[in-house]
Length: 355
Image 1 (cartoon, rainbow, N blue to C red):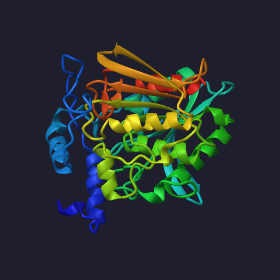
Image 2 (tube, rainbow, N blue to C red):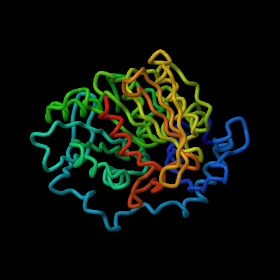
Image 3 (cartoon, one colour):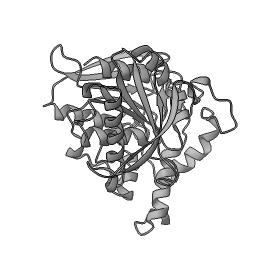
Image 4 (cartoon, one colour):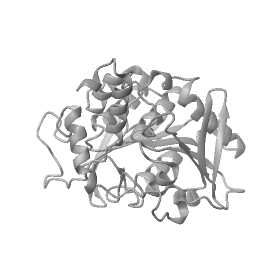
């Protein structure tokens, strides 16, 4: 495939964006819970990028409908009394964002959650799909939805695989961390109650932020994402998405993490979620790991936790058997959502606030 050659950076980057933006189907679990043959019985079989892109294109029609500009938008996603559009400006750059503020926020102990959308999504779409605004009312959350413009990435992806956006003090991480600090100051939110979460490319960027800014974010939620340092260029990004990431110490961070990943994710291999979890454990001196299995909202789930004694878990990994590249327990009104399985949004908020 000519565009994969490193000399064609523009074409290869576009291919990565298209792969991350691809919509896979949501296959049902096999009678045994979705087990597959091979060394990793739960992982989709390895295949070339050409085959992945072809399969994603073929299966687009069977995926949950993504609302377009002409579709009806639910009230909680519209700009209104509780949602406002803003722009943050700093020396590192600027970012537009939507901000949700509960009506009764005055006098409450607040927390901040930064939500990073996936490729081809936008703040309104992500708010609909995750239903995080409803949880904001319930738990007293200020929710920020930064928007990645097409001028920065043609598919609206956060540039998790670009070295210019992987370090502290520059690029997208610096802008997003600066936004979080400004909002925490404005609403008088303690650093221990500042969190970040994301889906796919947004999940990968959330892990970058957890590694680069552990002094800003105290916990991260990573859904169908990749570990920080999984890729440093175009070719390694393809390898990471297929499950061949070279995990580095970059992904080790003292920040607590909760990870969700589906075993049938054909866009970002589920081994990436496990890698984020394992790196979180190694950063804590390899504490004891506990594992449980359960059926939640129609999906079999293997939940792994690491921690010390009676203290809150340092990391959780939710492996959703038969789950695809979609936000678990999400609203069908948003793109890249699976209404079945555990409620990832609620579990993330529970994890964030229990420390």
